[in-house]
Image (cartoon, rainbow, N blue to C red; front, side, top):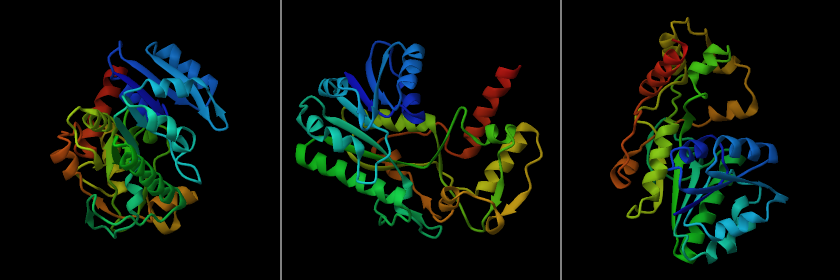
Length: 293
């Protein structure tokens, strides 16, 4: 088995770190400095630079010997960057039969707080999410053309070690922004790893799966619960209309929906380690407390 990862970012690196030491893993990063730091910390990982137009020529050879492909790179303005450079290489590798593409539930756009599943219409309300929807279709089209099994994992808001409300509170960056009726799904990076592993299983169905928690919740509730775990006073509530937000941060609040994970559980057989934000934050707070003891 040989795994190639386009984009050794937060979620992909968490997954790769769970792989057996003897498994071959090659992945891409955007700089030589990042490649060196990954290879020094993880001897079983080969990191190659892919930041068009900078492209390590060894990538094509490694892809040609891969049996599994994980895509964790956001698309460019003209579609998926990986397919733009390596579509024919990927299509021609007979032993490469499983491809997992990490997308986002942002492709659904706004559904005014309603529960939706994978059959909901895609109504991306930002250029960024529109590009994701296009990239999904490009990968699915490659699967149709080549017979390779393509799995699209649509991820909710990602949190985990080093990236969570507890960290934001300690660093003084957390804000309790209130927009009445607004909810978000989240997903712990450990559960993303479980979804990727399930998607790569030999008998796993291909298709599209939402990777979300069980309880979409108001963002201010998450901050308040994290503060409780830390024994801190939560920051004061700030009304959304008066909040000083970047355009990107404000765009997140333009989509309000509750995204079901039923298909992930029933068809891929994934059992979530952290079904709610409370489960995930409690575990993260416990880890921090042990480190500080």
